[in-house]
Length: 97
Image 1 (tube, one colour):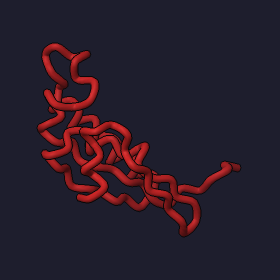
Image 2: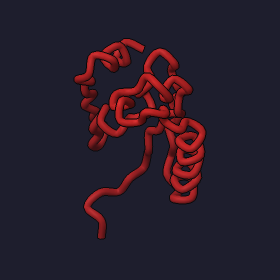
Image 3: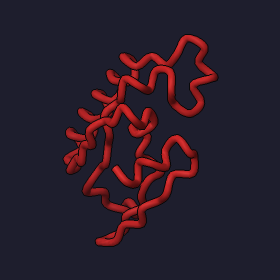
């Protein structure tokens, strides 16, 4: 038996701004393949739907190219959520959005 039962998944659409402005994009001289990232996003969304999980889908924000990386923004146990403050300066405005 699994230690946790997952009821919800938080995902965020991939912004077009991810191509050249995301943290770590200097490692991709030709830019990030946004279309491939969007295809991968669609795949994970379908996988989650097939797992009978409630999906909370956030709309992308072009002002924050890394907004699609929601895996480190909150920890939720039971009815309590701990919202983390992003460390990188390019993401700190996300908490006000």
